[in-house]
Picture 1 (cartoon, rainbow, N blue to C red):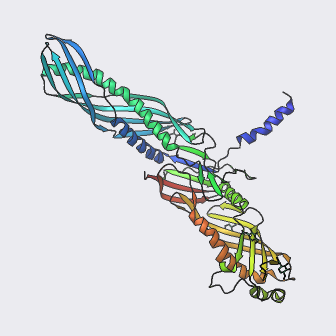
Picture 2: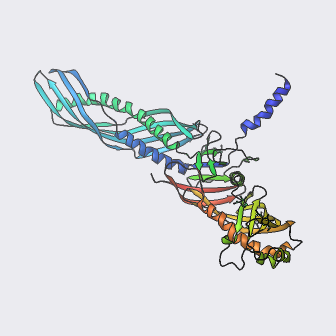
Picture 3: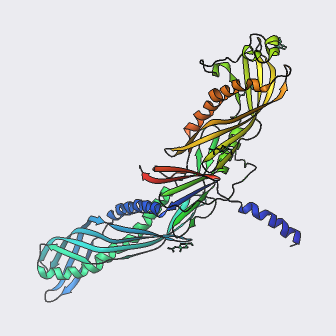
Length: 473
Ligand SMILES: *[C@@H]1O[C@H](CO)[C@@H](O)[C@H](O)[C@H]1NC(C)=O
Ligand SMILES: *[C@@H]1O[C@H](CO)[C@@H](O)[C@H](O)[C@H]1NC(C)=O
Ligand SMILES: *[C@@H]1O[C@H](CO)[C@@H](O)[C@H](O)[C@H]1NC(C)=O
Ligand SMILES: *[C@@H]1O[C@H](CO)[C@@H](O)[C@H](O)[C@H]1NC(C)=O
């Protein structure tokens, strides 16, 4: 290969590796314990379904000779998984250890010997100190969702005790042997396949990650994993795309996520970091969709307003308007000049927008006559909060600077209109935006897991939500 080809390849590398996350999720030991409880509950249900096949055979017992025996109708009557632990295996996954599990089983026994003697009864078998150790690997599947797989599984049985009901005592010794051997191994063989079933139902659950969450008519948000899970000795970290897209038309914005790292906090089960990239991708999508433009008409101005959107109001400041267009209604067209830009600093989220505002008089034949164009430089402060499984917010005006872009009605002092536009912004524009922000945007979520004890921190470059989890399913 020629050197220039190597160079071309090198130039391509950053593209294929440009997988910085817009959103990061970190599951702490406390969160893993929440997952462990879900897993153990699922495994307990599965183990209750163990079907113990009938066992029968013929054995020679001195001095009576051949004894034909059978054990039937065996079913599990009690099963407990009282203690379990989950431990991380950095780089690969985790181990789940269940100890001191117990199980009891009830069944019927039947024997036939000396050609004509039959006897039968029932028995109870109790297994104590059962332990199950399984190691589980975690990776990202082809849809960008986390997926788990059993890497190994082993079980050990502790003590077994059997209590017979009915029959002769010499038979008990006979059965104790067969029950211990046949029954225990039959039971033991079924445990790891059921562990594997529980792990695959965990996968069903992980498949509910909302890798593409619909928002509204315009946008959806993508949360697939962009790299392998980061498994350390204290947490599992997932790097998610965290990007807003136009529905069905996924166009990348001209900026990409900067790397960021969630601080080491352990009090909550889960930490979710939403970067300024995610917020700006929203701005990019909604602005492209034209939803950040607004036509302000008089009917949008609250009745309690000290002024109406008329040439009379503006004529008081710009005499030419009163003279050329007396007694007309007006419309203000607000258009963003650039995508509004989010800034996230410690305890401070702001959005800066540069827009143009064109004022028109509405003529008697409904044609619009332009009056003037203003360049508007505004900055709003945003408050964010978590509502259910959504991030919601509200903005309020921090700064409004206006300059004259063009006038069709002679020169005038823009500052004299400042009060009017402050009111328009506060009473019309921001409430419209806030209605949408109040609805919120879905956070990454799984199944029917709800967030609980949620706390929000605003750090440099990202918003971090610390939360506990609760299963409502
Ligand atoms: C966990 O990993 C960190 C960093 O790799 C290391 O400093 C720490 O000693 C480890 N802790 C344990 C308990 O292994
Ligand atoms: C505002 O009005 C103009 C002209 O009437 C129209 O072309 C434009 O689509 C409107 N914009 C919005 C956001 O409704
Ligand atoms: C937030 O940041 C903006 C601009 O960066 C600044 O003007 C404002 O004073 C800050 N607010 C607080 C509460 O720090
Ligand atoms: C509306 O009236 C204005 C002035 O009276 C005129 O210039 C304009 O052409 C009219 N527009 C239409 C669509 O009739």
